[in-house]
Image (tube, rainbow, N blue to C red; front, side, top):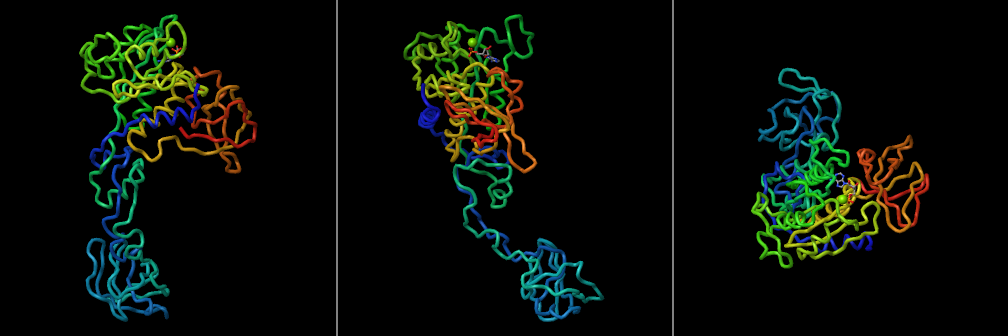
Length: 419
Ligand code: AMP
Ligand code: MG
């Protein structure tokens, strides 16, 4: 059994970096920047008015009321090209260029217009209502770094500097394979010994949140040969010649031409008589890096590589699947795209109740978060009955860390990872 930190180290080491590609900015949210975003111009590009009003010389407005001659107007997109002199003003709109000679703007509400003249009712201060040239950013300045995840909030800034297309890292294609003889498709009515497949669609949703293309493969029963063939096919083996250890005949199929970089299996990773994931991987010649992690839920997680495909064998329980995907698979997905941060965002919060840990493993327990009347972030237990409780899990906001052999006391501060 290895520590979570060791598992993460191995995953990061094995997550080979993918090349870059260029995408339209409109499709870039969630992708990882493969180039720096730099300002290609000063912002604002000129002294810019913050108000609708009149551009004036500050000196002219110190004894009010004062009447100034309106000599022109400066509108957004077409500034006034002349220069204003003492006793003069230019009508100006929000966003327009402040004309030469003016050093403040008085807002229209504090003026009275009269027959070609403007009466200024309150004195202005130097640079009042003006965004100075280059005060936001100077040409050439670094805005975003390589490796940052592009968020919706970053789009306006990126667009402003002309990045209609942007270089990002290619994303890994993901294939999802749920296994188990008791599992039926969600549109089927389970027989008395059966349950519906909730893992595949959940994993697809998690993958799509990371903007990946995820293919759900047809369910496989706890059948060694079928599982072996399906894995071989999913990692792109076309015939038995390519499988170093095993005689496996792989039928031509639709997934052959879209070989995935990551294969996620669920179920069949424990030590039961019908748990065939590890034996199948071994027979196909996969390199298994770890198969037991000091983690609750998620102890029997398997991480392997076969034919340059990273394989995650996650335990079957839906909550274990969610936790191990969030901790491990997500990290690999971001690491392959050279993301600066590949782990979930950390925080801390106060426990509303006592939370029990595990004797021999670290815990990452799904919890919900709320804020109390003092503005304190509070961890609320989801009252789990076990790692199969996906109904409780559906309200999870974060994972709380409980170190091995410890409990978290009511009122204590704990580390959380935001989901
Ligand atoms: P296993 O890891 O195969 O021992 O499965 C552990 C538990 O998870 C069993 O109770 C399974 O029925 C359940 N399980 C396995 N696969 C799925 C799935 N795709 N959807 C929902 N539950 C599952
Ligand atoms: Mg099973």
